[in-house]
Every structure is written in C-alpha cells, then in structure tokens.
Image (cartoon, rainbow, N blue to C red):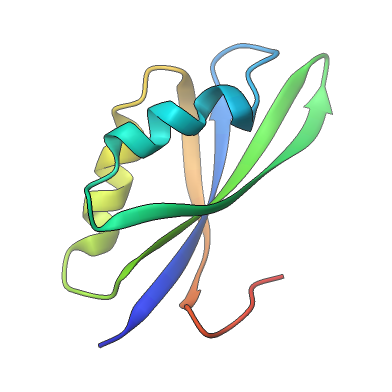
Length: 93
C-alpha cells in the first residue's frame, strides 16, 4: 500500500505551549509504527500557537483512526483537525 503523511493542526489548551513542548508527548502517544516528520508553530494571538505536525505512517485500514485517537489522549491539546493526508512521495504545501 505504501506510506502516507498526515498533517494535523493542533491547538494547545494554554498560551505558551509550542511544538517543542509537545514533541515528546506526541511521540510517546503514537504507536511504534508512526513517527513525527516535522513540526511547525504558527502564532495566533496572545501567546497562543497553532502547531502543525506531520506524522509518517504506513497506509492501512484504521491507521487514521489510530492516529486521531492517539492525539486525542494528549492533555495539553484542546482540539485538533486533519489538514491534509498525502502519499509520502508527495509534498504537501
């Protein structure tokens, strides 16, 4: 089937929480066959950041549900959305 990269937009519960602070929590909650490709902070306002994270994993049934369940368990994240999913050989803007 191949590999895919899912780009997620995460919104932290509190101002001042950046991707650097969430990296370890995200990686610890991901299954062993998923990994963080890159993270980018985007300032919103008043110290609040949107965090974009690219997760690399094998394309298989239920993989997105597993990924979303893993992210949903992280206490520091108030909400998230899937922005894009692409084959690993394709670049997402």
